[in-house]
Length: 202
Picture 1 (cartoon, rainbow, N blue to C red):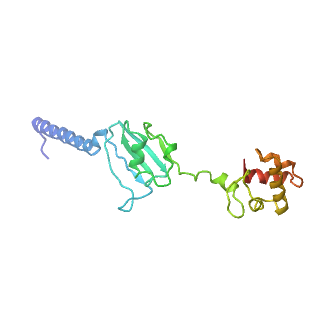
Picture 2 (picture 1 turned 180 degrees about the vertical axis):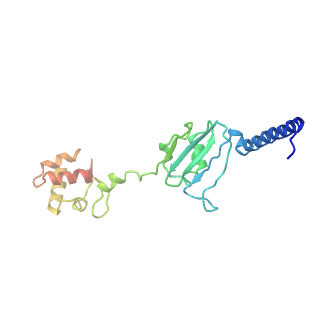
C-alpha cells in the first residue's frame, strides 16, 4: 500500500473535521437546541374526541403548570401563560359543573406554578339542620305561638294529652316566648324537652 503524501493527509484531516462539525450540528438540532421542552397535557374527564389531548410546547420559562380538580368538566394538569388567573384554569378544564360552589373559590387569584386548583361541590343548604328538624310526617319547624294540638302530637314524646296541656299552658300565660317555658308542664321530662327544642321555634 503506497504511503500518503502530506497533502493527502491534510485533505483527509480537513474532511474528517468537517464531518464531525456537521454531525454535531445535526445532533444538536434533534435535541431541540438544548433549550426546548415537551409537555403533555392530560385530562381525566376526556373530551368529545374520547380522551385527553396531547401537545408539545417550547420551554419559554414564563408558563405555569397547574392541577385543576374537583367540580370541573375535564379535571387534569394544564399549562397556561404566566399571569393567568384561577378563572382561566377553570375555563381551560372545561368550565365548572352544575354542582360547583364557585362562591368559595377566588377566581381572580393569580396562578402559581405547581398550584392545585380545587373547585368544591356545593352542599345542599341547611341539609343537616333541616333533616334534624323534620318529623315523621315531614313537617318543618313548628311555631310555638301558633302550634295546634295535632302538630304538637307529631313531636316525639308528645301525645294528645300533653299537646292539650301545652296549648292550655300557652293560653294561661298569654303566649310563650321560649320553648324552655314548657319545662314547667307536668309530664315533660329532659328527653321530651330536647325533642321540643328541635321541632319548635319561638
